[in-house]
Length: 356
Image (cartoon, rainbow, N blue to C red; front, top):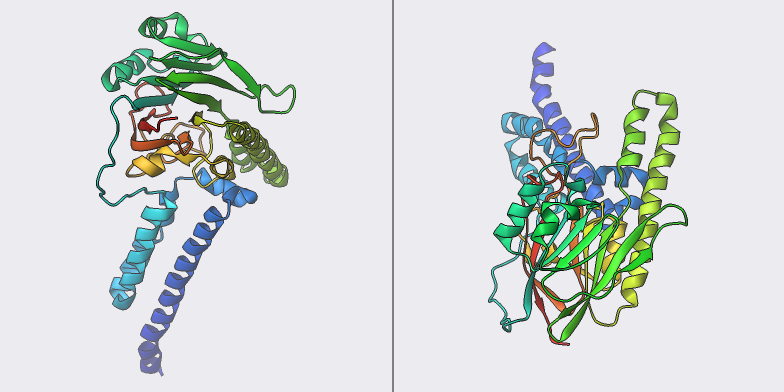
């Protein structure tokens, strides 16, 4: 009897192991479908957007060990699962090498956007980045009062348009600032719009900072200590998501009214899979990093369990700072900077502007 049981164990191991591997693959497929259909339609999907997606690689190590030990034929499936997490789920952008499209002289500009957190970290590092990368157009968020110091000196010979937390600095002329409300009355959410005269081409500029998810994430974090508050915390989190989507929808309405070239940049507090970014794409904008970038382009990381910036210095796992463009503008290169100046990494893009 004992020998019969021993001989049956390997077969049972194979069944359980194959079941676990299939379940893991189905789970990754569900995450993909959830993200593609608008993850923030449901609170669990929205919550997942703000987690480091690399956590879904965690089951690979034990499953690979068991597969090598008992069922090597499943290793290929685990390899596909790992590639799927590192690729689509983590937001990897990859483009085949292509023949560069011709760009006319005088039709390109370099843009930089960054949430500088009021310059609390290192304003000199920000100035150093501006000197190093030589942007022609700079969008800053959370920049209240920073123009009265060294940063203002750096932009002394530039055209500057600012209001509250927003600064737009340009080497070309800018029109008068236009402040547009995007939140319910009394909530204070707004965007800054102006028009850049880039040679013969007027370009509408939108500097945007959507509602932070911190309030909703903190509600979920504190609910761990008070299990009875979980339902209330979920509602608070959903309310936070809906308010951000409302803001994104109103910005999208403004974009639809534009008739020429348009650039929107800033801290959207929304990963690319969110409905907030989808609403802007539906307004005929496209993402500069998705078009001209390579890699992940992460700009921010937030540690949910302890409220810290990240697990380790310099860690980022979300792409929530974006540059979005109308069809008249093409991204020919896009990349992120360091976290020396802010816990948000700046985003840079080289843009080619079509003639009006």
